Length: 614
Ligand code: SER
Image 1 (cartoon, rainbow, N blue to C red):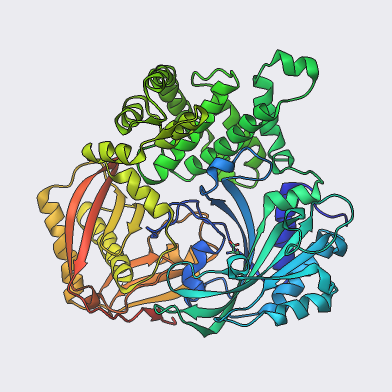
Image 2: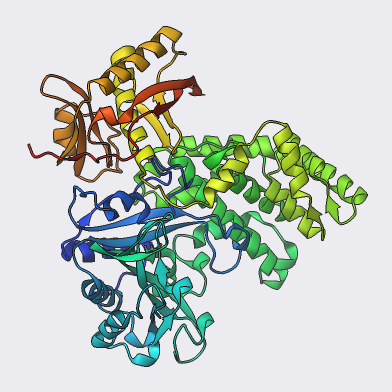
């Protein structure tokens, strides 16, 4: 068999290889994390698996594999060069207390050299160098040597390079070993510790063998996990022998589409595309691909949270279009989206299914922003002429508020004019307009992963009680449309056409409090999606669940208050919630209402709901 070359074939080969090695293939999760207020987007394959890495039982077993769409915006300003992307696909395999270093390294090596047929000489490795918290990872290095990697291709690097986690302040973490591919000139030589720029990281195997506690101490874990992540775009670049991720099979047609729209006589005559043209085409490719995936997972452009990031991506893409002289009057971004869906729709069927919606959302945003862009740029130019080396905060806010210029865009424009923006002044003007939300989004974005503290676990169980109570009071048309939990409050979006009356709000609150007073037990059992449906469990029955699911039941022999598909964790008894109060009922979007609620007065320490066999 010849090695897989296309992105579709590489994805499939990865899943097949690990399936043959007894891993359950699970579906990738949406880009928007459920019940995790600390990050806006799924940033790694392990992210949706955090509860299982912390010890919850995964219904599909203890060896898992998937392909996860991810989004990271830390490097958004670097997008446009040869390798940076905001949206990317991460292939990953996990051992939840099953195999450890030996199994992980052997399988990684076999996949690289036998399935992808990458010559061993083109590979190098990094391992953890050791420090006061944990010893040098000689074990991993020995394992690499035993499969045939020579000593000189193995670098030992410090924690900043070869350690992953914990995801939040505390939790599982450990040394990792990374695999690199030679991208330098001539014959491969040395290792990433010596000539870093010549070796491109393609895969990371994390050995979660420690727990970091609140005092910053690392203690060995009883359950040792493996968490790996392999970048699909980079792997495709290796397999397709291209130097640049934008030249891989699935991205090249998108860049090509954009370049065809850009009509530059000089470039046509000379037959070479300018670096600046390429930069803008790549920005548009990356940002619009990311936008298609974000909209496909249900987000709409807005001024807060994920909606704000989406808006920034689309508007930044439109600014690049303008720089390339490409017309943008509502038809451009939907046309590029069509090319994106052509490339990704076979594997990500939901994109094809929602293609019309995706195009409509983009078209609307493009029109809205396009109208304001010219006028806004004129205003910007006038302000620049008046200002010294700093653009004042009021003007930046005016550009944001009136012309829809994300502050980051104004900063970019200012930088192009060798100016700074008074960011503090902008924040002040922003706060004066009582809209703190974007700032919140930014802070959130730099945060870690969900904690699963007592507070969030209680609120998670309260969310199930609320969901069940709403259905009992308002009717069976109520379905969860979104859920977001912080340590302070829960936020629950559900389908319902009208504003709830004060009486209905009171009835729902009373019903939840009654369930709390009855101190009902909470437990879960494992079953198939089909059986969960048969037993009338509610839950979002979509592709995010594998064939086996956990069903959490709240109730005793006489009443089942709630039965819901969910990953957990939950408290063991409803009495631990103390009391429940609805703080707000408001509109979320058309046909969707939003409730914010809190719990108070329960114990500080909780017990977690356990599995019940049935
Ligand atoms: N969590 C690790 C990473 O993101 C391995 O998947 O690199």
